[in-house]
Length: 473
Image 1 (cartoon, helix red, strand yellow):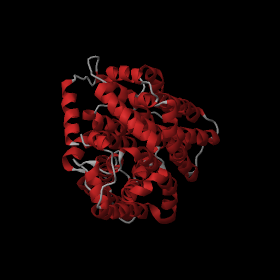
Image 2 (tube, rainbow, N blue to C red):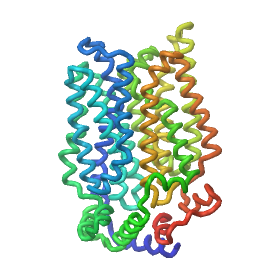
Image 3 (tube, helix red, strand yellow):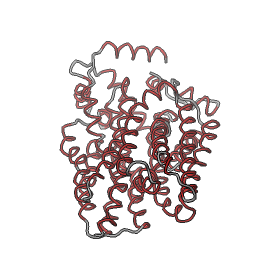
């Protein structure tokens, strides 16, 4: 096994590659992720305008539905998206999901009835759910091993950039202008993606080996020797055809599934989407030292920077330590926000008006470094390759379901027990997360799939010899 891995590593050094085309392909494809970010945070800037302009008044409950319809729409498309990508190709599926991402902005921006806004947000959510599965699949398949982790983080980085962009549109009080600006990213994807080649892995699965070789030369360079990588892709395609993975196969990976679902629960129930969707309103209510629009942009900038540096932190510090620190700081941030709102009505906190913005920013920074990217990263590290696609689809569906639950119920939580107790609840969930990480989550940094399985189950789940050599490189 070691000899195979060493041989592959030695041959990879002998064949020259260029990475520019891989970066370009990933950046273009992840414009869909940028669009997801704009749909997620659009409500922060746009919802206050409906009542301010008095053209289409939106109640708090209607606002909670407008916010939550994106994650609700994403739930039913997470699993079928992978099957559609296998049948029609990654490229066609991504392009097809981009069409509603583009047109829904014009329905939302120019609608004269709330029904159309509800419908467009739901349809856009369905496209977001599909894109959240297929785009990472595409970027991982066009990337060579040495930069696969880096290209994988671009998806999350683009989401945070989209969130920042939507926050920044608060400079205008026109819903039409906001919608037009947000439609630029999917428009660029529709125009440019036809010039990006299909995934070589999918072409091999379809038996189109010559086309796959040409695509590999496009992404790796004209002088690249494609034989070894094509052989690896053919082996994986053969294993996938024999295994035909589905959700029921995850029963053999009960602890890995428990860890993955547990991390997704903590990630979403800690309240991140409540903060992102209602950022402007929360900062308005807190009486932040800066106006809420400026504060939101500051938080967005901090999130983008933190996500950018998360790759370095993850590789240096390890997954488990960062998850523990992330959950701890998230808990402190939420408890601080809870305390501020609790004493706001009975004490003069003018001198401490910087606390909400600082707590908000601290939560977003530590989330972006820890509980934002790492649960998704660990899906690829806890499961063998033959069930990884099924695990990813299950994780995505769970994640979007929880995002809908938090976004929809946040307003109900505030109405029922007040904003202070709501933030305290999120803080308690993060605190529980520190215990969960300590007890249940294994360290996966620098370890092979076989070593991880040994720690999880005390025995190795059988991994084919050739596949294991590929995965431990």
